[in-house]
Amino acid sequence: MKEHIVVLTGAGVSAESGLSTFRDNDGLWEKHSVYDVATPEAFQRNRDLVLRFYNERRRQLQEVEPNPAHRLLAELESRYRVTVITQNVDDLHERGGSTNVVHLHGELTKARSTVDPQLVYDIGYRDIQPGDTCDRGGQLRPHIVWFGEEVPMLDAAAELVGTADRLLIIGTSLQVYPAAGLVHEVDIDVPITVIDPGEPATVSRARVIRKGASEGLAEWVNALGFSG
Image (cartoon, rainbow, N blue to C red; front, side):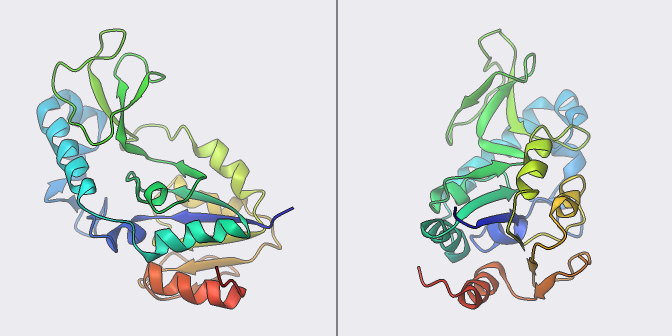
């Protein structure tokens, strides 16, 4: 049985590829307030603005590439069972080669129905336009978990964290709940490592590597004795 490494990733991983973080310290994302583009109320108030905003994010996503952190996580699968649980809505983990990725906050490359949340469509990097509808005739919206909405993958993610032999946290401040609560699902004897150059929330008994995602992950992997 392969050792199970569960990796929680946040915006710090995507930032190294050139993507803007979802929520910077000033509360803005690409010069927009998150409450203007990332809430159900915003979509009801100004549908066209919200659709245009995520269309632009999709175009930006096409222009960037996975970075060494994405690729190194994928390489770990040659020796370990690796589950990536990400707060990021981009597809860089998949493009970097990871095969087991759980998206807590949705996916930019998918759309879903506004009348039936179970109707989810792969759209790749195409735009969603006003008037684009699902099979039941409802307007399509980004498949993103907005502020104020439930996180449908949270329970599944908590179960996965509970099976970890090692927990690795990369590029997240661990200050956004409910995702931040996942760290408490790990067994008491499981080693925890936090890789973040900033000031992540304190995690008891965690080793902290205060470096960027790629540099910090390379250090952790070397200590693990993994050579690819």
